[in-house]
Amino acid sequence: MLRGMATVNYWTADLPAARKWYTELLGVEPYFEVPGAYLEFRIGDYQHELGLINSDYVPAGTSPDPAPGGEILYWHVDDLQASLARLLSMGASEHQPVTERGHGFVTASVIDPFGNVLGIMINPHYLDVLADR
Image: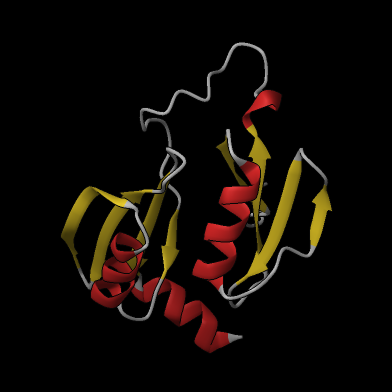
């Protein structure tokens, strides 16, 4: 039923600042934009979508509360320590420190300057799937 991550969305009360921050982090400009409301990047080996949404559009019954919570989507990185250091140097704050999960899995997460949790990890299964492509 679930075929793969299609889009992950992060909320922001300051879309222009979030655009600048994520453009610097990702090294690419958004490929799609609805001015003042939404913008989207395609990133990584599978061109997954990372969307930034103006928090004015939070669905009814939810909150763009700046306190982190909910799900954590982990992005595979080649160098976890260097990626974490870069995120922290750009103004993110530590959410969860580097954690060995066993069998080669290592995770960490940060809170971006806009209140969203951004997970990073070393994931041997990701590399196996990529190698089989």
